[in-house]
Every structure is written in C-alpha cells, then in structure tokens.
Length: 98
Image (cartoon, rainbow, N blue to C red; front, side, top):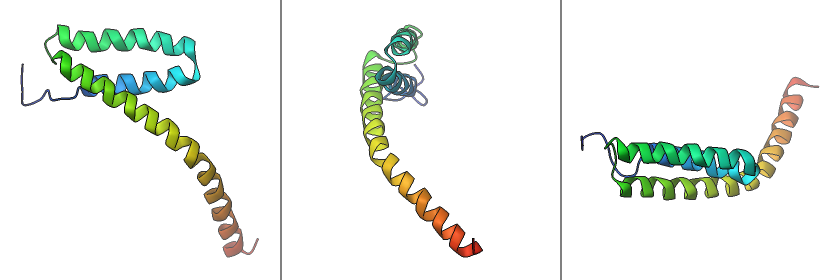
C-alpha cells in the first residue's frame, strides 16, 4: 500500500456515500440502486488493496454526516436564498431606474 497517497478516510467512500444518502432521502428506488453501486465501489477499494476497511468505514461515516448536514443546511438556505434574490433584484431595479 502506498502510504504517501492513500489516506484516511477514503474520498471515494465519502463521496459515494454522501451522494447515495442524499438521493436515498428523495427517491428510495434510485437510492437503493446507488447503495448497491456504492457498496461495490467501496468494497473494491479494499479488495484492490487501496484502502483498509477502517478507511472505508471512516469515509462512509464522513459521507453520511456531510449529507445530513448539507440537507439540513439546504432547508435553511433555501429561504435565505429567495430573500437574497428579492433584495438583489430590488437593488438592480433601483440602480437602473426601472
């Protein structure tokens, strides 16, 4: 194993788990399909000797936490984004004299 490159946690496991968890929360069918694909991906990383199982577990936990936080933050930011767009449009209209 090349310790200069492969580090804890696995970026592949983190990304695959985060995307899968986010999709699973919106669409169970696609989430199930992505879960199978993600598990195949992360197990292949161990099989090929690129990561240790703990690297994969750490990446999966990081991905789940990241997905949870992003989904919660999105609910909060969605309302703020709408308000910012309204304020921005008002400022643009005011500056152009419209």
